[in-house]
Structures are given as C-alpha cells and as structure tokens.
Amino acid sequence: MICGTPGGPPVTATRMKLRDGRHLAYQENGVPKEEAKHKIVFVHGGESDPDPNRTPKSLALDIEELADYLGLGSKFYVVGKSMGGQVVWGCLKYIPHRLAGAALVAPVINYWWPSFPAKLANEAYKLQLPQDQWALRIAHYAPWLTYWWNTQKLFPSSAVIARRPETLSRQDLELVSRYGEGRYLKEVATQQGAYESLHRDMKIGFGKWEFDPMAMENPLPNDEGKVHLWQGDEDKKVPVDLQRFIAKKLPWIQYHELPGAGHALHYVPGMIEGVLRALLVGEEGK
Image (cartoon, rainbow, N blue to C red; front, top):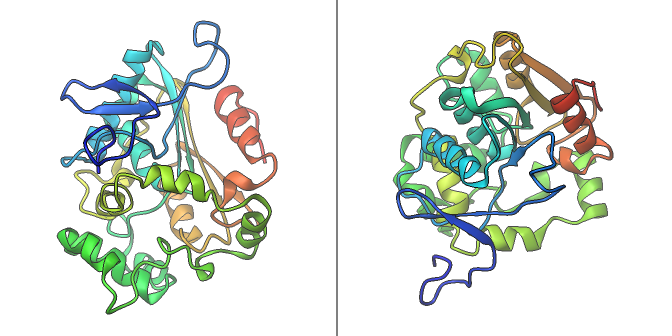
C-alpha cells in the first residue's frame, strides 16, 4: 500500500526523490533555514517509500542525501527517539563527518550487540514480557517470520506494538492519559501497512547489525560535537541497566538519566527544551 500508487494512500507530505528512485517524506519546521543557526534532522515515521534493503547504513545515507537536498550545510544535528535510535547509531557510524551533534532519546537497544556481557543482556531481556521476548527473538533469529508472528492469533504477539498498559511505567500512564497516545500519528506512520513500518523496524532494530555501536571510538573528536543519551530509570521498554552500561563503555557519550521517568520522555514537561539546550548550546537540561 505505497503512497501515491493505485489503491494506496494519497501523498499528502512534501517528498524528495532519492538517487535510487524512492521518495523520502519530510516536513520543515522552525525559522527559514537560511536564517537558522542550527539545523536538526528528527527521525519519525511518514510517507516515505519502503526500502526493502534497509540497513542502519542505508538509513544514514538517506539522511545525508536529504540534508544535501535541503541545503542544510556541511554539518547538522540528528535526534532519534525510541526506534529512531537505530538511525542515530547508523549516522554516528557512517556519516560522522556530517554531524554537529546527536541525541539519543530512550533509544531501543539490540540485546545481541556483541559487547554486552551475556549475563547483563540476559537479565535485561528477561525484564520484558514473555510475549515480547518471543517477538524480539523472532526478529533477530528468524526475521522473515516477524510479520507472521505479530499478526497470527495462536499466540500473544508483541505487547509493545499492541500498546499494552503493562509496557508503560506509572509516569508513562499519567502522561499518556494527559496528552493522548498519538493515535493519529500512528495511523499516518503505518498507513502503508504494518509490515513496512512496525515490523521492518523490528527486523532492523533487533536483527544482526554489521557493526557494534559499543566498539566505536568517539565519532566526533576534538570538540567537533557532542553525543547525548537520555533515559528514564523506570522505562519498561528499554532497560536502564543496559543504557548505563553503554554510557560507561562509551565515555564520549553524555548520559542523562531521569529519575521516575519511563519511555514517554517526549511528554515530560520541559524535556524537549532540555534536549535542545544540551545539544545546541551545551546547557544541562532536565
């Protein structure tokens, strides 16, 4: 159900055509880019054409091509929330020379990154609901079954995709009840089909990566930029112990942990402003 094709959803977003012929959807916000002191690419779901060959590297190269198309200059910032973390890691690996800085906000973690101690990764993995453990295991070991597993009715599928309340912290539940669940945005992001959005994200995020993020040296040395990681200590979707290990393993990451916060960090009052202050001007935000 590709946007703009017969039987597919209509094209409502601004889009650019990539070198390989795919369309990439984007939206510009803020002051005119000619006047802006800082340019930020925030990763989100939209009306982009599916990429059957998607990898963390291809995602990074798509962002670089978008930045050149929009004339964002030689360097720009990238921000990724939750599953958007896989894109930021890819940018740090493959296009660090284009980055002025990066922010990972409650980024989803691949339990199979080689540098995780087996005991730590296993303990964190078992904090997930049993049905989510199965969903992640299938995404990693049998990615071709991911769509089937999450649509079949014989066994419980991913509780995260189903937005089960058990996957939310106490603060998450309060924030979601106050601000809503973003159902409209979810409908837009998944309008081309669950396989090309949620399930491909799972296959990439929890599949076998061609690099280990924790084996990376500082991609932005000599004060060329900063990398920030934000995490709530009561996040039920992303275990905080793994984020703490990453921050300890990679001292070039500036780690921010929010006591009592869950996965819905973007709803925490002042959070977005704090991320931007830390990223753009070096101020410690909330």
